[in-house]
Image 1 (cartoon, rainbow, N blue to C red):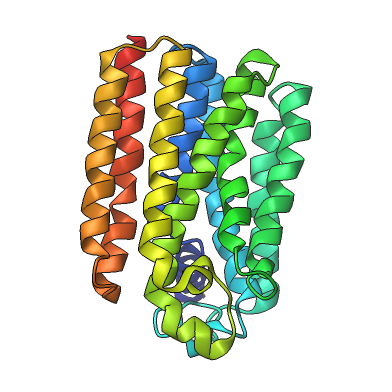
Image 2: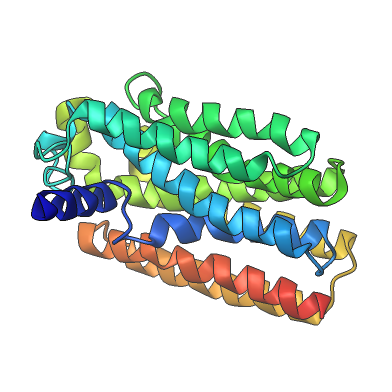
Length: 287
């Protein structure tokens, strides 16, 4: 009995990707950008706790619903065939129960914030559920993912200021472009398998222009962040963070130059440092 419980916990942890924190980091950094800018570098401790916890819970919930939605495709993709649902170690019903429990836990945290944030959180849940299913119908599911991964930004402003200034939307736009860049790199890893099983992505949509489009999205992200820094009168530390992030973007372009799958995956993982560089610049600028 005890061994069975331990195995269930382990399988649920794998389904939530606890062993692969990259997704949590990619959701965490823009949420923290929003919290720090909205609070002008002095976030309310409880708001910060809610967002840190909420990022973990919603990223985990997103992974669960993603694998539930892809349960008919994952067994035929090399990178995903050993995931718990695809391998038959977790049932679809168990996944739905786990997804519901994670969403309820996230909702319990959000309910401690103001009404505006609570209302906005409903949109975030809808986007998290919608994204995995769009891969069947549109060639740019990464755009939907971008909205889902950026929704913590307006929520952060709502939680800290009970308002949504233009800065919130500019920051969200920058992050959507960043998501389009790094998730297109991610989709390049699976492009051959996706074409075979019928899953759509921007890597397929852009074809031989994939690297150029990724570069365009990276430049847009950095350009909007530069504009925001000027608009918010941030100091040289912030621009130093942008220069460092730009260096990571160049490194990613070098990695994906030949479109080799392992190097594309390394480029995707490197985006954790891109987001961290921007956040470090923000923190230092507001000190």
